[in-house]
Length: 105
Image (cartoon, rainbow, N blue to C red):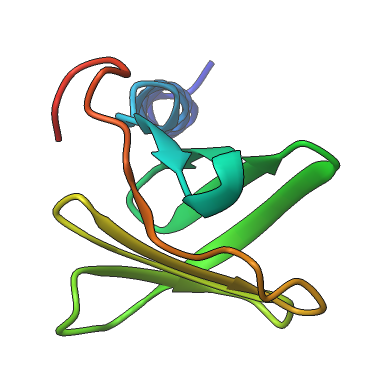
């Protein structure tokens, strides 16, 4: 194995390990009418786990806390306040981070 191949292999392994070690924040969200969902946040996206499926939202710049969206949903998390809107389902109201779920943000 040439020196360049060895260096390339070490760089690729390091990059692979870095992506595995990326921290993910897990939150449980409680809303009005007993509705809930879970969110896993990484540096560039949020994975929203709903009772009937999953949404992958991309992080967007915002002065209103952490903002994620795709063509079907928008999620904003600012401290314990949560705003979530999903195309075709506008009943996600009065949402907040469940403080009893895991470590505090």
